[in-house]
Length: 339
Image (cartoon, rainbow, N blue to C red):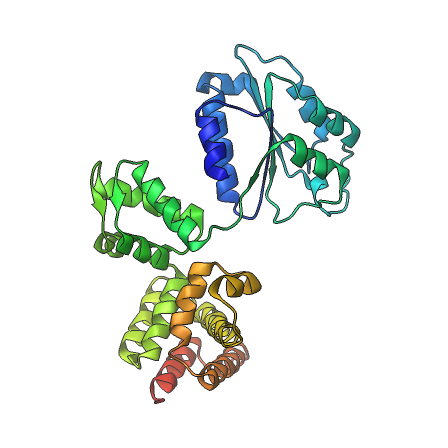
């Protein structure tokens, strides 16, 4: 659906109304930026581009602007942010004239493009105003991308900058940078510039140019623990300290990671598939895929014990009974001593 909408925008086949909603705000923003670029020249922005926030301004003010004939151009673009009246949220102090909005949905101005930017997971389908919005608007639902969609998105973004990327490099990029599109977009720009027009991004370039997130460092650290390679685990810990990561934060990340491993292991044994686990835990499927592989290296008892030990270490550190750095070092060495 997103590709179809983007294709129509590129061909300047505009709808007078767009409803953009979902949890992946980067895709919402990208859709809006594509729309503005295709609909207005840069010199028109001052006159024919307006932004309203429904948490600060009544929606009828935006509609009045939409009904005003554009200056020095063919059309206006009106961005209406945070239209919370499409959700189950309670009304706020701003008085929105929803009757006027209902009328506008039924007869939008032909010279304006009104974009509702709703960064919410769900809309309230029971509301009349929501039903009208969906009925009369071009709807874009920007949910988290599945692994295949995410890989395709990375490839398209690299190719749009004149470069190529190998499958191994995509794997390395997703492991290193995570699955947040904004962070990935920044890294893709860097890699495309490094490869140059016609060049190919390989996994080696990703390893050289893309810094690990703290979560990826913790994943690597746990992988080293699973392999009983404690010198490497300690070195990863020291590298995190060099990057100004606090030991207490590292303990928290370790605890969160071991809880994830325990959860995916239990759900997999209960017969859940990767997609079902991702939905149940509200975690990206690619992260679940990596966690399933790592969880297989530990027994249920080992995971439960690690979680208990992390909780105990966290208490000792916060109560002042043990030095923060020493607490992590002792944990790593204790885990490494188990066979």
